[in-house]
Length: 562
Image (cartoon, rainbow, N blue to C red; front, side, top):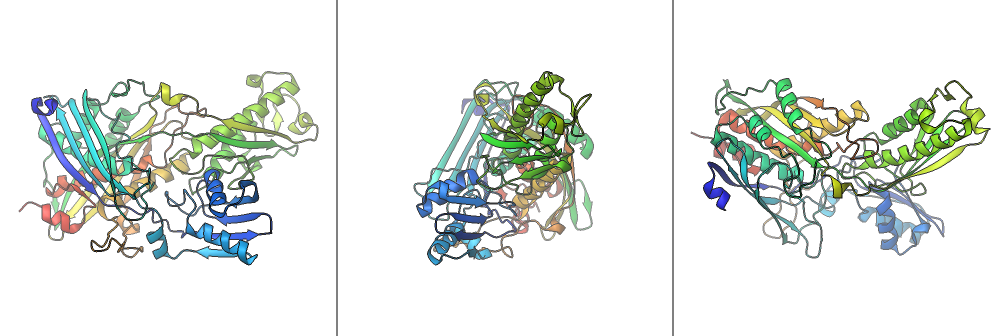
C-alpha cells in the first residue's frame, strides 16, 4: 500500500477470465479385455505411471494384474492426465461380461464429465518510479473448485519471479462451488495469469509513457526477487529484443487509433511469456543389439509432441546410430516408468533417462574395447577405428536401464522458460470483430532437441492464446449451474480462418541445471501471455481497453470510445 501511494505511476486493475475446456479433437475412449486374471486396457491416457494406480484402485485390483497401453494420445491438453469414466466403465464391463468392451464418450459427455479450467478474477497492482522500475507488485487471484478438492489453478506461478519489485503481495483464494472438478488444462496457471499480468503491464507502460518492450526490459530481475535464488538461465531480454526486431516493432510513442483501413482499425501489441520448468523422475531401458539397432522402452507417452522422434534422436546420437535404426516403444506399463505427458516435462525427463541409459551402455562398451567413455567414438554401428558393434557385443544384446532423478535443482535455482509475443490485430469499427493479422513468438527454453517438433509446439501454444484472447469460454446456466455450451459448435476454439501466419523464433541456449540434456519444457510456454499481446493490440488498434477474457465483439463494442 505504501509503495502504491508513493509511486510516480501506479495501476490497480481487475481482470477476469472465463473457464476453459481442454477440447481435444479425439474423444475419450477405452477398450478393456479381461482374461480371468489379467486386465489389459487400451486407452488414450497421458500419464500411465499414475493412471495404472488410479485404475487399479478404482476396480480393486493389484497393479500387477493391470496393464495399460497408450501408444498414441490424440489430444489431451490435461483432460487425459487421469483416468476418467470411460476407462473405469470399460474395465468393469469387461470383467463382468468376460469379453472385450469398448466405451466411447460423446462430445457432450466429454464436456460435461471431464475437468475444466477454473474461471478467475485477478487484481493487479503495480507501482513504479519515474523511470518505470517497479517498486510494488501485487497479484491476487480468486479461482474455484469443488469442496474437498486440493487443486487450485496456480495463477501466480510466474508472477513470483517474472519482474523485480521489493514490495510484493501475492495471494490465491479458492471458492468452493458445485461445477465439474477444476483441474489442469493447457498450461495451468500462466495460461490465465500471464494475460492478466501482461495486460496490466501495458496499462502501466501507457501511464508512464514508456515503450512496452522497454518497460519489461527495465524490470527483469537479476535473481528470483522472492527467494533470492539465481536463475538456471534467463533469456527474456534476448526474446524481447530479437522478437521486436523480427516483428518490426515500432518503439516510438504509442497511441490508439493511429491506423485505419476501411472499416478496420489496425494496431499492435506485445507481452512477455514465462512458464515454470518442471522435471520428474523417469526410467527408460535401452537395448543395443548385435544387428546394429537399438530398442528404447519406457511407459512415457506421445501426445503429438514428438516423443518417439526425440528419444530416437537421443539414443541414436549417444550410440552412433542413425535414428532409423532406433525403435522406440512407448505407452506400455510393462516398460520402465516415466513421468508422462503433462507439465511440459516429458522430453527433458524421459530424454534424460534415455541419456543415462545410453551413457551406461557407452561405459560398458568402452570398458570392453579398453578406452574411457569420453574416448569412445561410435558411428555407423561401429567403434571408430576399431571393431563393429556386433564384434564388441559378441553376438549378445546389451541392455541398461536409465534412472533419472531431478535432485535438488529447485533448492539451488529458479528454472523457467521465457519468451515474448508480438501481435498485429484489426478491429472492425462497426461490429467489434477482432482479427489477428500476424503473430510472432520468440522463446528461450534450453537446448532445442528437435527444431521441427519444438516449432510445432510453439505454433500450437500461440494458437491456444488466440482462443483464450478472443473466443474460448465455458458458459454455465446461472439457474442450476449446468454447462450450456458442451460441444465444439458452441465452445469456440480457434479454427483455420482464425489463425494467421505465425512466426516462431527459438533463442538457442543451454541450461545444464535444468536437465542432463540441457533442455527445458516448451509445450506450454507458447500460450503463456500470448492472449495479452492480442488484447493490448486491440487497445492500440481501436482504443477499447478490455479487462475481461475472451474479448468478444460485444465486449469490444461496449468499450470502444465514441
